Length: 460
Image 1 (cartoon, rainbow, N blue to C red):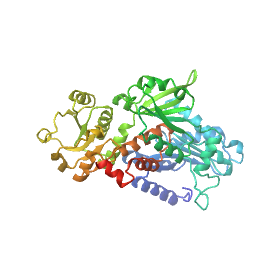
Image 2 (tube, one colour):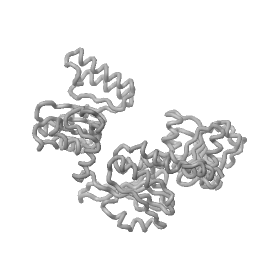
Image 3 (cartoon, one colour):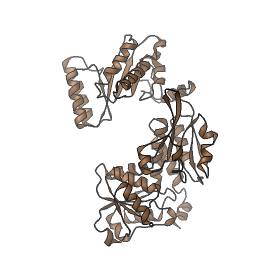
C-alpha cells in the first residue's frame, strides 16, 4: 500500500488490487486498519460472503515513537471488529530498549480479548530497522525473512530464517525437546528418519528416537516420559489403545476413532502455576483423508469399501465420513465390521460377490489388511476403476497394488499415508508448518526398492 498515493484515485486503485487478490484466491490478504472504512467494510463483506481468503489486519507506524497504550490500541484496531484472522503491527523506535514493545502490546491485546470473550487471533509484532532485529526473533507467527542467496535485503533489519532460529536457540526461546515413536518390534519404522530430517530442515534441535517396549507402563515409568524435555511421541502398534488411560485431554478425532497415535506434552497455566498436560490426538485419519481429498476433490460422491476392522479401519471410516463418502465395511469377522457400521454409519458387507454389490457406486477401496494377507479385489470390480488405497508402506508393491496398477486404477500407497500423518504430528508438536517435501522424500527413499534385486524380491 505504501506505493499508492493517498488521493482518491490511488486509494481506489489499491482496493481494486485487493479485490483482484480475493478473486485470485490468495491465502492471506493484508488490509490496513486505517484505510477508508466504507471501502474496507465492503471489501471485508465480500471476502466473508464469497471467498476463503484469510484477512490480516495491519498497521504500520513509520518515523515516530509509540507508547505501549497506543500500540495495544493499534492491535485492537487491527482485529477489524472481529473480522480479521490475524493482526500485524509494525512500530518505529530509535531505542533498542523498546524492541519488545510491539510484542508486549500483542500479548496484552490477546489477554484482553480472552477476558472479554472475543476471538484471540495471532499477532505479528515487529519493529522497523536494525534496532528492531530482536523483534523478529521473538515474533513467532509469520515473521518476514530474507534469504542468504538474495543480493540484498528487502528491508533494513531483516534476517534469514537460519539467523532467527539460531538466535532463538541461543536465547532459549526455542528449547530442545525429546520425541520418540512408542511401540513394540518397531525396528522397521521410518518415523525416526522422517521426523529427524524434519527437525533438521527447520533448524530445530529436537531429538527423535525409538521407545520399543512390550508394556506401555514401562514407558510411562521411564525418565524419558517423566522428564521436562519430553515433547511428545508417535504411538504405534500395540499401544494406540493402551496409552489412552495416561492421556489428560483427548481430541475429538482420537475420542471418536478410539485410538491415539500422537502424544503432545504442553505446559498450561492454572491458578497453581504451570502444569504439564498430555494431549492425545490421532493423525492417522489425515493420512487417509488428505491423499483422497486431492484425488476426489471437495465434493466426493459414491461409496468407499473399507477392508479390515482394526484401528486403521476406524481411522479410514472417520476420514471417509469427513470426505462425504458412503461407507461399506468388509471383514472376515463380520461382528467387528458391524461395530464400525454402528459407530461411523454405513453398511456391513458380508460378501464381495458382484451380485451383492452391483447397486453400490464404489469409488474408493481402502485396504487396512496386512500385506501378508496378499488380498486382491475380485475381477469384476476392476473395470469400475476405483481409487485403491493400501495402508501398508512396506512392501512398496503389495499384491493389491500390483493388481490395481495392471488394471489402470489410481493408487495411493501406505508411504503417502505415513508422511501425511507425520506432517500432522510435526505441526501438533511444533505449531509450525512442516517441511512437507523433506518428509515425503525421506519416506520414499526408505520405502521404494533401491535396486532391481529388491524390486524382484518384492514381486516374488
